[in-house]
Length: 137
Figure (cartoon, rainbow, N blue to C red):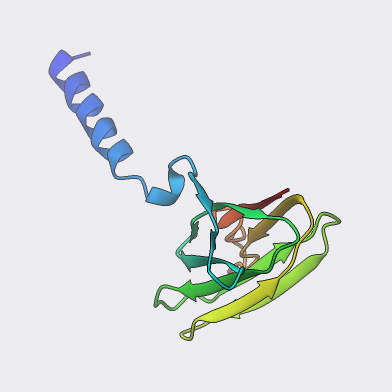
Protein backbone atom coordinates (compact mmCIF):
# COMPACT_ATOMS: atom_id res chain seq x y z
CA UNK A 1 0.00 0.00 0.00
CA UNK A 2 1.21 3.50 -0.81
CA UNK A 3 2.71 5.20 2.28
CA UNK A 4 1.31 8.60 1.25
CA UNK A 5 -2.17 7.07 1.22
CA UNK A 6 -1.63 5.59 4.70
CA UNK A 7 -0.42 8.97 5.94
CA UNK A 8 -3.55 10.63 4.56
CA UNK A 9 -5.79 8.04 6.23
CA UNK A 10 -4.02 8.56 9.57
CA UNK A 11 -4.44 12.33 9.34
CA UNK A 12 -8.15 11.97 8.51
CA UNK A 13 -8.68 9.66 11.50
CA UNK A 14 -6.82 12.07 13.80
CA UNK A 15 -8.97 15.01 12.68
CA UNK A 16 -12.14 12.91 13.05
CA UNK A 17 -11.17 11.99 16.62
CA UNK A 18 -10.71 15.66 17.51
CA UNK A 19 -14.13 16.46 16.08
CA UNK A 20 -16.02 14.07 18.36
CA UNK A 21 -18.83 15.77 20.29
CA UNK A 22 -17.93 16.88 23.80
CA UNK A 23 -20.41 14.34 25.17
CA UNK A 24 -18.18 11.56 23.87
CA UNK A 25 -15.29 12.66 26.07
CA UNK A 26 -14.89 11.24 29.56
CA UNK A 27 -17.43 12.76 31.91
CA UNK A 28 -15.98 15.15 34.46
CA UNK A 29 -17.45 15.39 37.93
CA UNK A 30 -19.38 18.56 38.71
CA UNK A 31 -20.34 19.27 42.31
CA UNK A 32 -23.62 20.98 43.11
CA UNK A 33 -23.01 24.36 44.74
CA UNK A 34 -24.56 25.17 48.11
CA UNK A 35 -26.13 28.62 48.34
CA UNK A 36 -26.51 30.71 51.50
CA UNK A 37 -30.04 29.31 51.96
CA UNK A 38 -28.54 25.80 52.33
CA UNK A 39 -29.99 24.56 49.04
CA UNK A 40 -27.68 22.79 46.60
CA UNK A 41 -28.10 23.92 43.01
CA UNK A 42 -26.99 22.53 39.67
CA UNK A 43 -27.95 23.34 36.08
CA UNK A 44 -28.18 20.56 33.49
CA UNK A 45 -28.37 21.36 29.81
CA UNK A 46 -29.48 18.83 27.22
CA UNK A 47 -29.37 18.57 23.47
CA UNK A 48 -28.66 16.15 20.66
CA UNK A 49 -27.58 13.06 22.57
CA UNK A 50 -26.00 14.75 25.60
CA UNK A 51 -26.62 16.08 29.08
CA UNK A 52 -24.02 18.47 30.53
CA UNK A 53 -22.78 17.94 33.08
CA UNK A 54 -23.24 14.19 32.94
CA UNK A 55 -21.65 13.33 36.31
CA UNK A 56 -22.94 15.31 39.27
CA UNK A 57 -22.00 14.99 42.93
CA UNK A 58 -24.36 16.25 45.64
CA UNK A 59 -24.74 15.95 49.40
CA UNK A 60 -27.23 13.55 50.91
CA UNK A 61 -30.28 14.65 52.90
CA UNK A 62 -29.95 18.27 51.81
CA UNK A 63 -32.33 20.00 49.35
CA UNK A 64 -31.11 19.87 45.75
CA UNK A 65 -32.50 22.03 42.96
CA UNK A 66 -31.84 20.87 39.41
CA UNK A 67 -32.45 23.47 36.68
CA UNK A 68 -33.16 21.77 33.36
CA UNK A 69 -32.84 23.35 29.95
CA UNK A 70 -32.55 22.07 26.40
CA UNK A 71 -30.95 23.45 23.25
CA UNK A 72 -33.43 24.59 20.59
CA UNK A 73 -34.22 21.90 18.06
CA UNK A 74 -36.88 19.77 16.49
CA UNK A 75 -36.20 16.55 18.38
CA UNK A 76 -38.12 16.29 21.68
CA UNK A 77 -36.21 15.29 24.82
CA UNK A 78 -37.09 14.22 28.36
CA UNK A 79 -35.19 14.06 31.62
CA UNK A 80 -35.79 10.93 33.67
CA UNK A 81 -34.11 10.54 37.07
CA UNK A 82 -34.22 6.98 38.41
CA UNK A 83 -34.15 5.96 42.01
CA UNK A 84 -31.98 3.11 43.32
CA UNK A 85 -34.90 0.73 42.78
CA UNK A 86 -35.10 1.64 39.08
CA UNK A 87 -38.34 3.55 39.48
CA UNK A 88 -38.49 7.11 38.11
CA UNK A 89 -38.22 9.89 40.70
CA UNK A 90 -38.76 12.49 37.96
CA UNK A 91 -39.90 12.37 34.33
CA UNK A 92 -39.90 15.84 32.77
CA UNK A 93 -40.51 16.81 29.13
CA UNK A 94 -37.89 19.36 28.17
CA UNK A 95 -39.15 22.36 26.25
CA UNK A 96 -38.33 25.97 25.59
CA UNK A 97 -38.87 27.00 29.23
CA UNK A 98 -36.29 26.14 31.88
CA UNK A 99 -37.72 23.84 34.55
CA UNK A 100 -36.64 23.21 38.13
CA UNK A 101 -36.82 20.02 40.17
CA UNK A 102 -36.36 20.09 43.93
CA UNK A 103 -35.42 16.87 45.68
CA UNK A 104 -33.88 15.65 48.92
CA UNK A 105 -32.08 12.36 48.32
CA UNK A 106 -30.45 9.65 50.39
CA UNK A 107 -26.88 8.57 49.62
CA UNK A 108 -26.83 6.46 46.45
CA UNK A 109 -26.25 6.62 42.71
CA UNK A 110 -29.12 7.95 40.61
CA UNK A 111 -28.96 7.52 36.82
CA UNK A 112 -30.60 10.12 34.57
CA UNK A 113 -31.29 9.92 30.86
CA UNK A 114 -33.55 10.72 27.92
CA UNK A 115 -35.65 7.67 27.00
CA UNK A 116 -37.02 9.16 23.77
CA UNK A 117 -36.47 7.42 20.46
CA UNK A 118 -37.51 7.81 16.87
CA UNK A 119 -39.37 4.88 15.34
CA UNK A 120 -36.84 2.14 14.57
CA UNK A 121 -33.79 3.92 16.03
CA UNK A 122 -32.09 3.39 19.39
CA UNK A 123 -33.11 5.55 22.33
CA UNK A 124 -31.35 8.83 23.03
CA UNK A 125 -29.99 7.13 26.17
CA UNK A 126 -28.32 4.47 24.00
CA UNK A 127 -26.70 7.29 22.00
CA UNK A 128 -25.15 8.80 25.15
CA UNK A 129 -27.85 11.16 26.43
CA UNK A 130 -27.39 9.95 29.99
CA UNK A 131 -25.56 10.69 33.20
CA UNK A 132 -25.34 9.95 36.88
CA UNK A 133 -26.15 11.89 40.03
CA UNK A 134 -23.93 10.63 42.83
CA UNK A 135 -25.31 11.54 46.26
CA UNK A 136 -22.80 11.24 49.12
CA UNK A 137 -22.81 11.72 52.89
